[in-house]
Image (cartoon, rainbow, N blue to C red; front, side, top):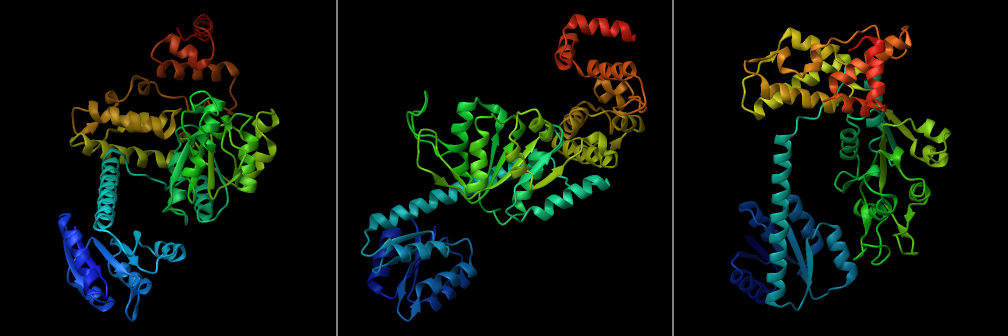
Length: 444
């Protein structure tokens, strides 16, 4: 690394330079802030060692100027006037670390090794983010549908406030994507965005994952854990599928929201939390409250700002654009020249019910892109169920008989399923009952 030493004492500069160069790095010197800024103007540096008491200059003021000139600098402050308050202030203003005088060469080399490790991790993170961007389709949070536009406008207005946000909508509609976008549009964007999947663990393990635990508090707790709330400190805690949160944990979450306090499992000392909570669910929480499965006070505490994302079937104006975005992305990823969808394929996409919403659309277009043999995605490149046109007159709430509604639903589930057993599991009935219904409705 290129290192600049800024100190008004020649002896300190020489000692520091020897320690730096014996560690395999290049070093330059500057006796004051003006010379340091001139050096930065002439070449790039990775690290600056900066004296807090710099003759007539105030080291903290020089720190601000250095970081303004080159924001990626790792600035290490050192001084004979070391105290905790000065160290905290230097770190608050952007210093990477703080070394008190007198220091040893090993201390200099240790902080340089720490900077190298941090830089390597930052490079790895950028590489992973770039890789992820190449593997994931671009996020599209626009809509031509007025109801969806209104929902997104409400969400984005609330993004940069401390208010809790509740995102409702069927599975696969992009609730987690919207939650992350809200975090990016908030003042907490530079802190962590931490996701907790509420139905993924047992009650005991979920509580420990959420709030943390102390060693020995339950079987398997072999070490202390600070939990997801602590990991999200200063940032956003996203509670995915909160409608499935165990009743025993709900009052503890309510305390977190109301009092900003929580306790680790096995510990009685309350801890303060500075987190913004965004929650999402595909359940109707108001109905869950009526049924006694979800606390009413927690529901109202979460329900400060509510955003409803409709299913893809309720966004016909957006469907073609989403499909086109996925086509372009996956065609590029598999290096195919795919210019369009055929009229028959577009008709089939538009007529499909999309029970899996955006997640299902992505999978369907990825599959079609792989299977396409020409420059156009054809109807035959889509899954078999797309050859069965949906009856637009038969939908929930339409003026049709229950038999017609049931027949249409069975037909779609059968088309989506691998076999009869799979369809029966989806419908929540046994295969024999499914056979009788098919026979009664003329679907055999």
